Image (cartoon, rainbow, N blue to C red):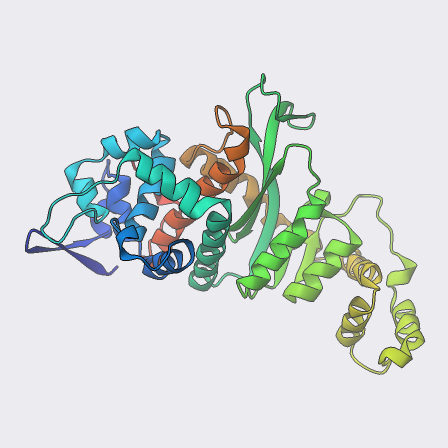
Length: 369
């Protein structure tokens, strides 16, 4: 584990994250001190600020780390700022050139989160952090699942979901191994299946190199099977119902029939099956491609062994909710998407801190205060 240096009032201090991993009590700020997001903060400066230097009274990476503290401690903006000790402020780099501690006001932090970043900015952060996690972890198995974001039983804006038996909104989360890389927010009764394409495009934007993409039966459709295979070059591991049957249109003979039928468009029967499927997908036969892929899964004896890896989703979702407050109680309806995404990217950044510092014990930050 690398050491990091910090200068305070002319004195240079060296520290390592290893000094805090096995303490009974350690501050989240001591943990975040070892998070390197300079490239992300530079991107935020370029995209959400003008070129006027007076905007940068506070370091952007320090402001990002401060909103992680807010989400982790589940405090208001005012209490988040007032809860920081002098040591924590130094760890978050809220010091000027003279070594004087300069903390932002609660209003400044709120303005940075809601108006500088906003929902679009947080979504961009999720993509950037997800890409870093993908490159650092080098894992090949992806999975997606939805999880409830509980609302008050008296909330007139939240939907009652009969499956979860509560009023709720919903988060759809894609993970690589046990690391979350992307999330979308929807209302409590929205279809899981229609959200998958957004996650596929996000993984494609991150240049994800995966072998499998697993999902439960709620995401099952021929189109989704085909989209995963075509866009991500990955094997779709989507659960199918117990009464699923082999579709005739998904057999090789029917694939060849339709490729040959569209010979004027460039169809070539005497080529690899992958080329035939790609040709059909690009010429309006996506569902037939999905039928072929579903048939292959039904015939594959190892399918359910691969599907078992998806069970990690519920465990990680539970840990995320224990670490961050993911419910939407007492949050204005127009701000729920923003704060749900904010909690998610905060958790992502904590995971990234572990990966950057090669911490072997995963999700070790749950005991921090």
